[in-house]
Image 1 (cartoon, rainbow, N blue to C red):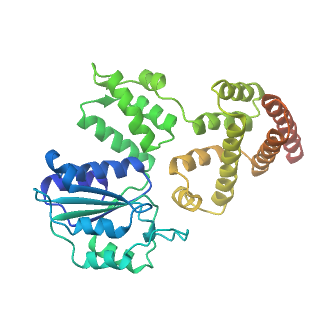
Image 2: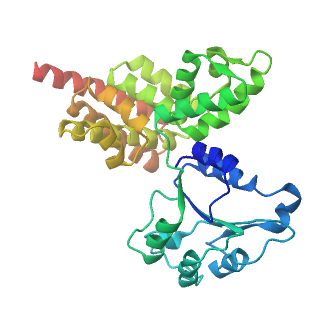
Image 3: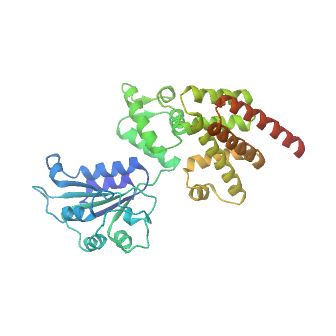
Length: 348
């Protein structure tokens, strides 16, 4: 189930004994944990809520807490965080965890304890006995990254509950400026609600004024200018990034990453992969794949490769010389425009 379904369930019926919160979206995991925390009265939270980080605390300590009776209350909440031993993680860890004890607990969970396994991972290792048993007894809550559509719906639902409205163009702008990253959208909404407190209406101008575009989105605008061979606009976009105090190496690294993604999307799309399959195969947010697909339709693979190789050359120059980063980028643009124009004439 998703976090919204969990919140609704916990208000209508008693909590289950074991939950698994699985996924990499931090804000969704936090919302789930807040829902569990609300089950324990405020005057009992100190004694009846236990949080245990498995990267620094033995599992046996958490299990001892889980098998203890609540202290002057009806329920105890025990949260096991970062249970890396449920994944394929093969790093050398110094803590000896009682995995058999956890399996035994799953066989007979303490009825007065709500045990929450908070797993900030894409997936668990289903071959492991402890994971198989966990999957059988736990109610699973998805904290996987939301798609653009899901993020839109979640934000509109949140605003509706809190008594706010957002115009369609403002929501579109919020999606664009945050790259449809739900965590970034939630952070932005807090500011937008404060700004729009009196009218309870979030307008486009508020998003434009308060929500800073992510570096990825700014670089995407630069990528578009490069591919269109718009020399002046590309230099202007690059200078804007420098003026915003972004480091040249970081800008170039994101540019290289963007062009690598465009090449991968172009190649895999031509092999017949769908948008959903591309996101899963490349392990990137579906919104980035959506934008990449819109971009690559208009450009040849050779043009993408030419830009990628030129940017790799800039990276080498930034690391091995003291030449001005903006000059290196200007030279790249000149060479790219000349090379792609030459290729276009040859194809014609």
